[in-house]
Image (cartoon, rainbow, N blue to C red; front, side, top):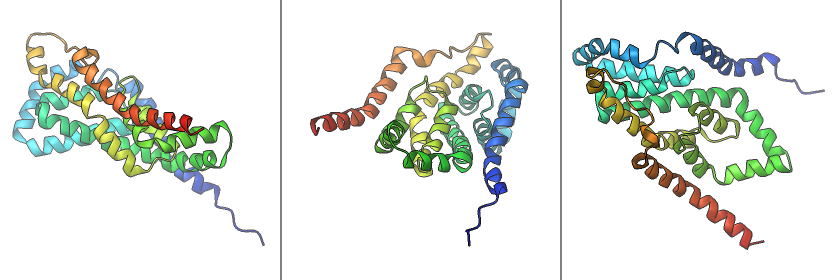
Length: 243
């Protein structure tokens, strides 16, 4: 007697959260790209500051929740949200609120992708042979380093850095730790820029969002990238010597 096959609806149900994320993200691209802007922040800055002063704890809670939604659904405006965190709460504790919101949002989309596709894809990669298996083994052998690296390199889109780990079987706890710690350098830079927005708005100017690529910020970040790469390079050299 043959064993019962899992119902097709079970597989579809697992993909539902990821499908919802993709649909909301697509809608957000067209509906929110002109809403979550610096102009909107400048226009409503006095009302935001007044509400923060009257309801500080609630403002923190709403802001973090707002950030989680933006990241979880890959909506446009993550950079504006980071600047807003600095504008409302200063560099510190603003950076803490920014990193917390971004990490929680990243975990949401990571779990949606892992639940819908990641486990099955990871199992297929593990059971395969040849180049695919070598890639999977290489990622598994250097998970911590690779996870920190994709968080530290500004060129890697945040959305990509949330999805790829889910598709190769990275444990949720490891993903959460490397996300929280890995995004701190970049978040600190943009939060500090946001902390100075009040003066910029008063002068009628615009913040320099390319500041992260200046040597005073980029060199330390590149140094952290090299530290993340060093264990991988050492393992590769040891592997060659062992041949």
